[in-house]
Length: 165
Image (cartoon, rainbow, N blue to C red; front, side, top):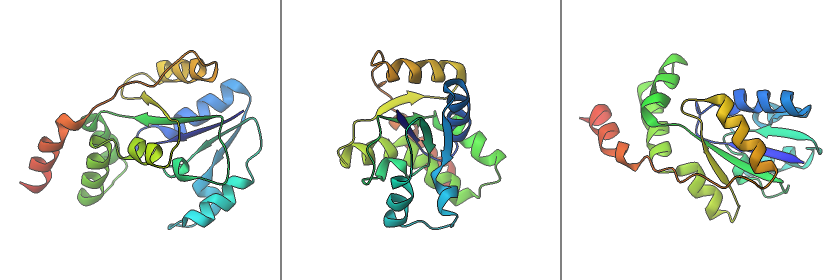
């Protein structure tokens, strides 16, 4: 089984991916590091994805755009924008980058892109409890968990006011 985890920067893709791969005994692949470039084209992303073997957890904020490889499970991790902002500030992100990522999360950007690319994706809220997130993903692997309905659009106006007056 190949499990792909995507989402806005700061939602916990790498942490959850590492914990999940450890629990399952799967290989962990950071698709962005496989390419090892700051800017990644879709063709480079797809070329790197073709090399992924079975029993792998693969993470990238772009993995939901891969068309060259079929994933058994595509997880879109989500995080409430107020919590995400704290995580991004802790990473040292600049004001504009934080704003862009918060707005993308608030408008369901990653999930919308996945659906737009005709992918079946399961949303999991990773705002609070990483252990609960792992349990939900494992249930999804068994077909016993459906996507959460996550709507952070209520945050759009407050994000806009805080960042742009």
